[in-house]
Length: 115
Length: 256
Image (tube, rainbow over the protein chains, first blue to last red):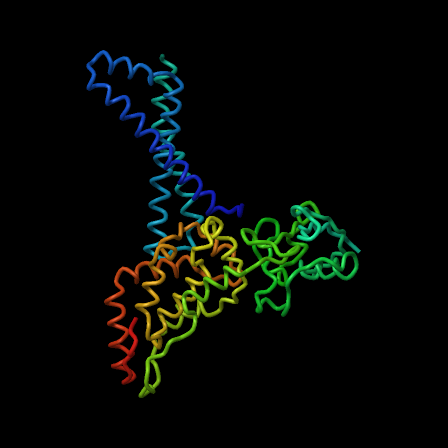
Protein backbone atom coordinates (compact mmCIF):
# COMPACT_ATOMS: atom_id res chain seq x y z
CA UNK A 1 0.00 0.00 0.00
CA UNK A 2 1.45 3.37 -1.04
CA UNK A 3 0.97 5.47 2.06
CA UNK A 4 0.46 9.20 1.65
CA UNK A 5 -1.63 12.05 2.96
CA UNK A 6 -3.68 11.93 -0.24
CA UNK A 7 -4.43 8.26 0.26
CA UNK A 8 -5.49 8.87 3.87
CA UNK A 9 -7.91 11.53 2.65
CA UNK A 10 -9.17 9.22 -0.13
CA UNK A 11 -9.67 6.38 2.36
CA UNK A 12 -11.52 8.57 4.88
CA UNK A 13 -13.72 10.02 2.15
CA UNK A 14 -14.76 6.50 1.10
CA UNK A 15 -15.22 5.40 4.69
CA UNK A 16 -17.38 8.39 5.56
CA UNK A 17 -19.34 7.91 2.34
CA UNK A 18 -20.17 4.33 3.31
CA UNK A 19 -21.11 5.55 6.81
CA UNK A 20 -23.54 8.06 5.28
CA UNK A 21 -25.18 5.37 3.16
CA UNK A 22 -25.57 3.13 6.21
CA UNK A 23 -27.07 6.02 8.15
CA UNK A 24 -29.52 6.72 5.34
CA UNK A 25 -30.65 3.08 5.37
CA UNK A 26 -31.11 3.16 9.15
CA UNK A 27 -32.92 6.49 8.94
CA UNK A 28 -35.37 5.11 6.37
CA UNK A 29 -35.86 1.99 8.47
CA UNK A 30 -36.89 4.15 11.45
CA UNK A 31 -38.96 6.70 9.54
CA UNK A 32 -40.60 4.02 7.38
CA UNK A 33 -42.11 2.42 10.48
CA UNK A 34 -44.47 5.40 10.72
CA UNK A 35 -46.47 3.71 7.95
CA UNK A 36 -47.31 0.95 10.44
CA UNK A 37 -48.78 3.30 13.03
CA UNK A 38 -47.61 5.48 15.94
CA UNK A 39 -46.86 2.53 18.25
CA UNK A 40 -44.54 0.90 15.74
CA UNK A 41 -42.80 4.21 15.10
CA UNK A 42 -42.32 4.93 18.82
CA UNK A 43 -40.99 1.45 19.41
CA UNK A 44 -38.46 1.69 16.62
CA UNK A 45 -37.45 5.20 17.63
CA UNK A 46 -36.81 4.00 21.16
CA UNK A 47 -34.39 1.42 19.77
CA UNK A 48 -32.10 4.16 18.45
CA UNK A 49 -32.32 6.42 21.51
CA UNK A 50 -29.66 4.46 23.39
CA UNK A 51 -26.26 5.92 24.42
CA UNK A 52 -24.59 3.72 21.78
CA UNK A 53 -26.63 5.27 18.97
CA UNK A 54 -26.13 8.74 20.42
CA UNK A 55 -22.37 8.27 20.32
CA UNK A 56 -22.77 6.92 16.80
CA UNK A 57 -24.61 10.13 15.95
CA UNK A 58 -21.56 12.15 17.02
CA UNK A 59 -19.37 9.95 14.81
CA UNK A 60 -21.90 10.44 12.01
CA UNK A 61 -21.69 14.18 12.49
CA UNK A 62 -17.91 14.02 12.09
CA UNK A 63 -18.35 11.85 8.99
CA UNK A 64 -20.79 14.30 7.42
CA UNK A 65 -18.52 17.28 8.01
CA UNK A 66 -15.37 15.56 6.81
CA UNK A 67 -17.06 14.20 3.70
CA UNK A 68 -18.44 17.63 2.89
CA UNK A 69 -15.27 19.62 3.55
CA UNK A 70 -13.02 17.14 1.77
CA UNK A 71 -15.33 17.22 -1.22
CA UNK A 72 -15.23 21.00 -1.26
CA UNK A 73 -11.44 20.81 -0.96
CA UNK A 74 -11.22 18.69 -4.12
CA UNK A 75 -13.51 21.04 -6.02
CA UNK A 76 -11.40 24.03 -4.96
CA UNK A 77 -8.14 22.32 -5.87
CA UNK A 78 -9.41 21.21 -9.26
CA UNK A 79 -11.23 24.30 -10.40
CA UNK A 80 -8.89 26.93 -9.04
CA UNK A 81 -5.72 24.98 -9.99
CA UNK A 82 -4.27 25.09 -6.50
CA UNK A 83 -2.80 21.62 -6.13
CA UNK A 84 0.05 23.10 -4.11
CA UNK A 85 -2.48 23.84 -1.35
CA UNK A 86 -3.87 20.29 -1.28
CA UNK A 87 -2.28 19.40 2.07
CA UNK A 88 -3.08 22.74 3.76
CA UNK A 89 -6.70 22.49 2.65
CA UNK A 90 -6.91 18.93 3.99
CA UNK A 91 -5.65 20.13 7.37
CA UNK A 92 -8.22 22.94 7.24
CA UNK A 93 -10.95 20.38 6.47
CA UNK A 94 -9.87 18.28 9.46
CA UNK A 95 -9.82 21.30 11.78
CA UNK A 96 -13.25 22.48 10.62
CA UNK A 97 -14.59 18.94 11.02
CA UNK A 98 -13.23 18.80 14.57
CA UNK A 99 -14.65 22.19 15.55
CA UNK A 100 -18.11 21.59 14.12
CA UNK A 101 -18.24 18.08 15.57
CA UNK A 102 -17.52 19.54 19.02
CA UNK A 103 -20.17 22.23 18.53
CA UNK A 104 -22.77 19.67 17.49
CA UNK A 105 -21.54 16.81 19.65
CA UNK A 106 -21.59 18.53 23.04
CA UNK A 107 -25.43 18.86 23.14
CA UNK A 108 -25.73 15.17 22.20
CA UNK A 109 -23.28 14.22 24.97
CA UNK A 110 -25.25 16.33 27.47
CA UNK A 111 -28.41 14.57 26.34
CA UNK A 112 -26.76 11.21 27.06
CA UNK A 113 -25.47 12.33 30.47
CA UNK A 114 -28.84 13.75 31.48
CA UNK A 115 -30.36 10.38 30.58
CA UNK B 1 33.85 5.48 8.89
CA UNK B 2 30.17 5.59 9.80
CA UNK B 3 27.84 2.83 8.66
CA UNK B 4 24.18 2.61 7.72
CA UNK B 5 21.91 -0.40 7.61
CA UNK B 6 20.36 -0.73 4.16
CA UNK B 7 17.43 -3.15 4.04
CA UNK B 8 16.82 -4.36 0.52
CA UNK B 9 13.86 -6.38 -0.70
CA UNK B 10 15.18 -9.44 -2.52
CA UNK B 11 13.33 -11.83 -4.79
CA UNK B 12 14.64 -14.42 -7.18
CA UNK B 13 11.74 -16.09 -9.00
CA UNK B 14 13.86 -19.21 -9.58
CA UNK B 15 14.56 -19.86 -5.90
CA UNK B 16 12.22 -17.75 -3.73
CA UNK B 17 8.54 -18.34 -3.13
CA UNK B 18 7.97 -14.73 -2.11
CA UNK B 19 9.99 -11.53 -1.62
CA UNK B 20 11.98 -11.07 1.59
CA UNK B 21 14.15 -8.32 3.07
CA UNK B 22 17.91 -8.64 3.62
CA UNK B 23 20.01 -6.15 5.61
CA UNK B 24 23.46 -4.88 4.68
CA UNK B 25 25.85 -2.67 6.62
CA UNK B 26 27.06 -0.02 4.18
CA UNK B 27 29.79 2.66 4.63
CA UNK B 28 28.18 6.08 4.97
CA UNK B 29 29.59 9.44 3.91
CA UNK B 30 27.63 12.71 3.57
CA UNK B 31 27.66 12.26 -0.22
CA UNK B 32 26.50 8.65 -0.38
CA UNK B 33 23.32 8.18 -2.38
CA UNK B 34 21.00 5.19 -2.16
CA UNK B 35 22.30 4.13 -5.58
CA UNK B 36 25.89 4.28 -4.27
CA UNK B 37 24.82 2.02 -1.42
CA UNK B 38 23.21 -0.47 -3.82
CA UNK B 39 26.37 -0.45 -5.95
CA UNK B 40 28.48 -1.07 -2.84
CA UNK B 41 26.30 -4.02 -1.86
CA UNK B 42 26.50 -5.46 -5.38
CA UNK B 43 30.29 -5.01 -5.63
CA UNK B 44 31.30 -5.93 -2.07
CA UNK B 45 28.63 -8.19 -0.64
CA UNK B 46 26.33 -9.85 -3.16
CA UNK B 47 26.89 -9.67 -6.90
CA UNK B 48 23.48 -11.16 -7.56
CA UNK B 49 21.65 -8.04 -6.36
CA UNK B 50 19.72 -6.80 -9.38
CA UNK B 51 18.54 -3.27 -10.07
CA UNK B 52 18.21 -0.85 -12.98
CA UNK B 53 20.35 2.26 -13.29
CA UNK B 54 22.01 4.16 -16.06
CA UNK B 55 22.82 7.87 -16.07
CA UNK B 56 23.27 8.56 -12.33
CA UNK B 57 22.12 12.13 -13.03
CA UNK B 58 18.35 11.87 -12.54
CA UNK B 59 17.60 12.13 -16.23
CA UNK B 60 17.25 8.56 -17.57
CA UNK B 61 14.48 7.50 -15.19
CA UNK B 62 15.86 3.97 -14.78
CA UNK B 63 16.47 3.90 -11.04
CA UNK B 64 13.02 4.74 -9.64
CA UNK B 65 12.48 2.65 -6.50
CA UNK B 66 10.51 2.76 -3.30
CA UNK B 67 12.55 4.07 -0.38
CA UNK B 68 10.96 4.07 3.06
CA UNK B 69 7.53 3.86 1.43
CA UNK B 70 8.02 6.66 -1.10
CA UNK B 71 8.90 6.43 -4.78
CA UNK B 72 12.15 8.23 -5.58
CA UNK B 73 15.07 8.21 -7.99
CA UNK B 74 17.76 6.52 -5.91
CA UNK B 75 20.59 8.22 -7.84
CA UNK B 76 19.63 11.62 -6.45
CA UNK B 77 18.45 10.50 -3.03
CA UNK B 78 20.87 11.00 -0.17
CA UNK B 79 21.31 7.94 2.02
CA UNK B 80 21.94 9.91 5.20
CA UNK B 81 18.73 11.93 4.80
CA UNK B 82 16.63 8.78 4.43
CA UNK B 83 17.95 7.08 7.55
CA UNK B 84 15.51 6.45 10.34
CA UNK B 85 17.25 4.98 13.37
CA UNK B 86 20.27 4.31 11.16
CA UNK B 87 18.21 2.24 8.71
CA UNK B 88 16.67 2.65 5.30
CA UNK B 89 14.43 0.23 3.40
CA UNK B 90 14.63 -0.08 -0.38
CA UNK B 91 11.91 -1.92 -2.28
CA UNK B 92 10.94 -2.15 -5.96
CA UNK B 93 8.24 0.15 -7.33
CA UNK B 94 4.92 -1.00 -5.83
CA UNK B 95 1.94 -2.44 -7.73
CA UNK B 96 4.11 -3.75 -10.58
CA UNK B 97 5.17 -7.38 -11.12
CA UNK B 98 8.70 -8.06 -9.83
CA UNK B 99 11.12 -9.60 -12.30
CA UNK B 100 14.00 -9.90 -9.85
CA UNK B 101 15.01 -8.02 -6.68
CA UNK B 102 14.45 -4.31 -7.44
CA UNK B 103 13.59 -4.73 -11.12
CA UNK B 104 9.92 -4.54 -12.05
CA UNK B 105 8.04 -5.36 -15.23
CA UNK B 106 6.99 -2.04 -16.80
CA UNK B 107 5.11 -3.54 -19.75
CA UNK B 108 1.74 -2.01 -18.81
CA UNK B 109 3.44 1.33 -18.21
CA UNK B 110 4.69 1.42 -21.83
CA UNK B 111 1.54 -0.11 -23.30
CA UNK B 112 -0.58 2.64 -21.77
CA UNK B 113 1.95 5.22 -22.90
CA UNK B 114 1.67 4.11 -26.53
CA UNK B 115 -2.12 4.12 -26.22
CA UNK B 116 -2.21 7.95 -26.13
CA UNK B 117 0.01 8.27 -29.23
CA UNK B 118 2.71 10.25 -27.41
CA UNK B 119 4.23 11.55 -30.62
CA UNK B 120 3.33 14.81 -32.32
CA UNK B 121 0.98 14.54 -35.31
CA UNK B 122 1.53 17.67 -37.40
CA UNK B 123 -0.98 18.94 -39.95
CA UNK B 124 -0.43 17.90 -43.54
CA UNK B 125 1.37 20.35 -45.76
CA UNK B 126 4.27 22.64 -45.08
CA UNK B 127 3.40 25.49 -42.69
CA UNK B 128 3.62 28.95 -44.23
CA UNK B 129 5.35 30.40 -41.18
CA UNK B 130 6.46 29.39 -37.73
CA UNK B 131 4.00 28.18 -35.11
CA UNK B 132 3.20 30.81 -32.54
CA UNK B 133 2.54 30.11 -28.90
CA UNK B 134 1.61 32.30 -25.99
CA UNK B 135 4.09 32.38 -23.08
CA UNK B 136 1.40 30.80 -20.86
CA UNK B 137 1.08 27.91 -23.31
CA UNK B 138 4.83 27.36 -23.34
CA UNK B 139 4.89 27.39 -19.54
CA UNK B 140 2.07 24.82 -19.38
CA UNK B 141 3.83 22.51 -21.81
CA UNK B 142 7.21 22.90 -20.16
CA UNK B 143 5.71 21.31 -17.09
CA UNK B 144 4.91 18.15 -19.03
CA UNK B 145 7.94 18.17 -21.30
CA UNK B 146 10.42 17.50 -18.52
CA UNK B 147 8.91 14.11 -17.65
CA UNK B 148 11.66 11.45 -17.72
CA UNK B 149 9.29 8.44 -17.78
CA UNK B 150 10.67 6.93 -14.58
CA UNK B 151 7.36 5.35 -13.57
CA UNK B 152 7.34 6.79 -10.04
CA UNK B 153 3.91 8.40 -10.54
CA UNK B 154 2.44 5.37 -12.30
CA UNK B 155 3.50 3.02 -9.55
CA UNK B 156 2.29 5.36 -6.79
CA UNK B 157 -1.19 5.65 -8.32
CA UNK B 158 -3.92 3.85 -6.38
CA UNK B 159 -6.04 3.46 -9.50
CA UNK B 160 -3.18 1.66 -11.25
CA UNK B 161 -3.00 -0.55 -8.18
CA UNK B 162 -6.61 -1.56 -8.80
CA UNK B 163 -6.55 -1.88 -12.57
CA UNK B 164 -3.80 -1.90 -15.19
CA UNK B 165 -6.42 -0.87 -17.76
CA UNK B 166 -6.18 2.72 -16.47
CA UNK B 167 -4.13 4.93 -18.81
CA UNK B 168 -2.11 6.24 -15.89
CA UNK B 169 -0.77 9.66 -14.88
CA UNK B 170 2.39 9.41 -17.02
CA UNK B 171 0.47 8.81 -20.26
CA UNK B 172 -2.22 11.36 -19.40
CA UNK B 173 0.50 13.94 -18.78
CA UNK B 174 1.89 13.17 -22.24
CA UNK B 175 -1.61 13.37 -23.74
CA UNK B 176 -1.97 16.78 -22.08
CA UNK B 177 1.32 17.86 -23.67
CA UNK B 178 0.17 16.84 -27.14
CA UNK B 179 -3.40 18.13 -26.82
CA UNK B 180 -2.21 21.58 -25.83
CA UNK B 181 0.56 21.71 -28.42
CA UNK B 182 -0.72 24.11 -31.13
CA UNK B 183 1.16 22.11 -33.78
CA UNK B 184 -0.79 18.93 -33.08
CA UNK B 185 -3.51 18.06 -35.59
CA UNK B 186 -5.49 15.41 -33.68
CA UNK B 187 -6.49 16.97 -30.33
CA UNK B 188 -10.06 15.72 -30.78
CA UNK B 189 -8.98 12.11 -31.24
CA UNK B 190 -6.71 12.36 -28.23
CA UNK B 191 -9.45 13.86 -26.05
CA UNK B 192 -11.84 11.12 -27.12
CA UNK B 193 -9.32 8.50 -26.01
CA UNK B 194 -8.56 10.08 -22.62
CA UNK B 195 -12.27 10.67 -21.91
CA UNK B 196 -12.98 6.96 -22.18
CA UNK B 197 -13.79 4.47 -19.45
CA UNK B 198 -10.18 4.02 -18.33
CA UNK B 199 -9.05 7.57 -18.93
CA UNK B 200 -8.96 10.89 -17.13
CA UNK B 201 -12.30 10.42 -15.38
CA UNK B 202 -10.97 7.31 -13.63
CA UNK B 203 -8.55 9.46 -11.59
CA UNK B 204 -9.63 9.74 -7.94
CA UNK B 205 -7.56 12.89 -7.29
CA UNK B 206 -5.43 11.31 -4.58
CA UNK B 207 -2.38 13.38 -5.63
CA UNK B 208 0.09 10.51 -5.18
CA UNK B 209 1.46 11.23 -8.66
CA UNK B 210 2.44 14.77 -7.65
CA UNK B 211 3.99 13.57 -4.40
CA UNK B 212 5.97 10.84 -6.16
CA UNK B 213 7.25 12.78 -9.18
CA UNK B 214 11.01 13.34 -8.77
CA UNK B 215 10.85 16.21 -11.25
CA UNK B 216 8.15 18.12 -9.41
CA UNK B 217 5.60 17.78 -12.21
CA UNK B 218 1.85 17.99 -11.79
CA UNK B 219 -0.01 15.14 -13.53
CA UNK B 220 -3.16 15.74 -11.46
CA UNK B 221 -3.56 19.24 -12.86
CA UNK B 222 -2.94 17.94 -16.37
CA UNK B 223 -5.63 15.29 -15.87
CA UNK B 224 -8.08 17.91 -14.64
CA UNK B 225 -7.33 20.09 -17.68
CA UNK B 226 -7.95 17.10 -19.97
CA UNK B 227 -11.29 16.46 -18.24
CA UNK B 228 -12.37 20.04 -18.83
CA UNK B 229 -11.21 20.05 -22.46
CA UNK B 230 -12.90 16.69 -23.11
CA UNK B 231 -16.22 18.27 -22.20
CA UNK B 232 -15.80 20.87 -24.96
CA UNK B 233 -13.93 18.68 -27.42
CA UNK B 234 -15.80 19.86 -30.50
CA UNK B 235 -15.14 23.53 -29.78
CA UNK B 236 -11.49 22.88 -28.91
CA UNK B 237 -10.92 20.90 -32.08
CA UNK B 238 -12.50 23.58 -34.27
CA UNK B 239 -10.53 26.29 -32.53
CA UNK B 240 -7.27 24.37 -33.14
CA UNK B 241 -8.08 23.90 -36.82
CA UNK B 242 -8.94 27.55 -37.22
CA UNK B 243 -5.79 28.62 -35.42
CA UNK B 244 -3.54 26.46 -37.60
CA UNK B 245 -5.23 27.74 -40.73
CA UNK B 246 -5.02 31.36 -39.66
CA UNK B 247 -1.46 31.38 -38.38
CA UNK B 248 0.24 28.91 -40.64
CA UNK B 249 -1.83 28.60 -43.73
CA UNK B 250 -1.93 24.85 -43.08
CA UNK B 251 -5.15 23.14 -42.08
CA UNK B 252 -5.07 19.71 -40.46
CA UNK B 253 -6.46 17.06 -42.73
CA UNK B 254 -7.16 14.51 -40.01
CA UNK B 255 -8.87 16.44 -37.29
CA UNK B 256 -9.70 13.42 -35.11
